[in-house]
Length: 278
Image 1 (cartoon, one colour):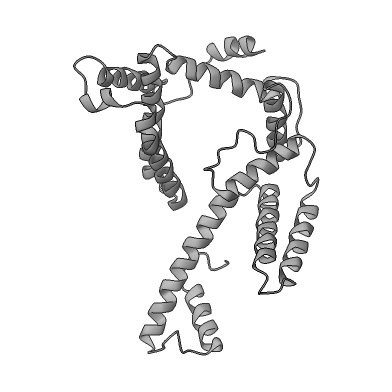
Image 2 (cartoon, rainbow, N blue to C red):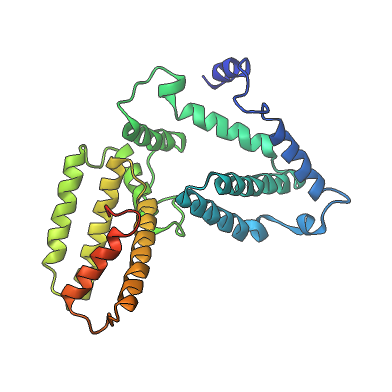
């Protein structure tokens, strides 16, 4: 199927303002920087020395996305793309693979894992696409492996939970309806409310269950749990700053204020900024 799809796509114009030519320029510039007479710093780098830069650039891109700033997103995407071409050039210099090998593998994967686009398969929606992705991935690797196998240990906990849940769904383990996921979340919240405050181990278990159930609900709603939590944290921080400013204006010491005064001030601070629905 892949060859036929590529043959059809090859006859179509590249849907980019300059037909992808600037990508080729990037590959040439990267090779020049690493080549004879190029940049000493670039020439000294290897996969390990660049690893931290990839992580930093990914986080900077996330910040730009969260800020909704198109100009920053464009710039940060360029920095992430630089990391991809840099690593590919290092591998090319070592005679292992090059950027074409990277792109070819990716193209084949995308075609293979989208049979509803490039084949005759039908899907009911985005959630089924994710489930099918995990199922097809398992087939490619010779069958089902452990639920957490291959998932980086450094992945943030919410993202890790979402990935484990998607993989489980691909194997038929998961909520079939959004209502069932919501009911499970309510049940976990009720169980958390019944925990004795002094029982830290039970509290940790139940908090974990609530978070895991919330990630499942987020998946059904098409929401990225990590992005949602980043947004909520930023909104709370902004409200807290407004709260403290209001308290200072009115000569109120938050540490000695009554619960009613604190709630009144916090509600006022919430009404004064964005995300007032939060």
